[in-house]
Length: 232
Image 1 (cartoon, rainbow, N blue to C red):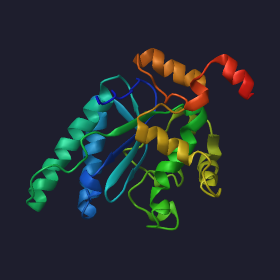
Image 2: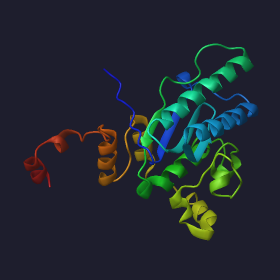
Image 3: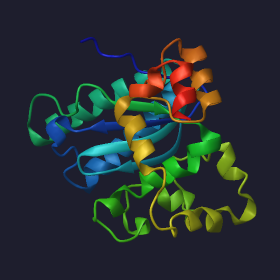
Image 4: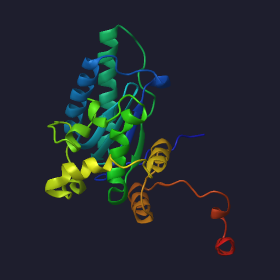
């Protein structure tokens, strides 16, 4: 079965996940995290990708990226992946691949899911029980978005800036809430390479990408309007 083409739309934020091959570690010491981040800063600037949120985990990476053109995101991930593998292989005297063959990507409806997706990304170490609070994990954008730390990698999204002068307090409040109602939706969209958003957003993505951007409904949902009226 042929692999479905990734859906990437310029000027739209995308949730990107890249995992280590067979879920094996991709970072082995503090220097590795720092080197990857420096490479990401360089490649993002070179290809025109704007990073709003990120989290570098032991064996995978989460990014929230707005590409300024269609080809930018793939170019970023390809360059970053190969450069980092060369660094790791040379440092640890190893050979072969480090990452899974394909990164996962999900276009995000900013109006509906931007902050939920940022929270999903920055709360990864908490869900993994590595830390109790995201502020205790050094390799994420939480320090910039919630605490106001300077981070050369992070560029605030326009919606983040609408939180106003008290945006740090408003953003931090998101993490005080228990649970995350959108967690499963975000996870399913990312792993399925589907767009995540309202119907109007899905239609916009499909129009711009020329690809089907959401999974088809199952069972009776696929049937006729007559069936749907009966079910109602």
